[in-house]
Amino acid sequence: MVDSINIKRVNVRDYLSIDLEVWMNNPDDMDFRPVAHVNGNRFSVSSATTGEEMASVDLDDDQLEAAERERKVELRVKFSVQGMHGRLNKIHPIIADGKAKKLANANWKTVQPIQFS
Image 1 (spheres, rainbow, N blue to C red):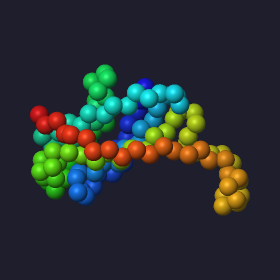
Image 2 (cartoon, one colour):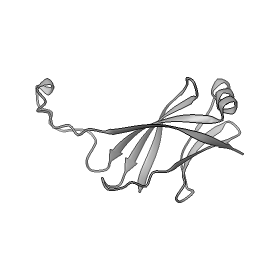
Image 3 (spheres, rainbow, N blue to C red):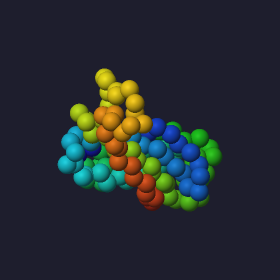
Image 4 (spheres, rainbow, N blue to C red):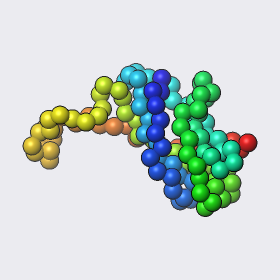
């Protein structure tokens, strides 16, 4: 289950492009099904499973125009897991050796339709 979603950046490329940071409760969670909504100039991401709104941001005129023109959004998602990712207290002094204790993050990119209201 998704613990929280943070919207990090909003850009306009081919589509409206939104960078999300998604925190999951544990590593076995696979329940992330986002649904994109635009209501007025407010963009929001909600869960398809529960219908709960997880994150939202206000769009400027250029971003809103791109969303209305393409009716799609590119979600660039960085997944992290509570208790596994975060700030390290000790980092091995030579990270280039491959001996640093840093966990890999999963990244995901998808194009989703936008529901307008």
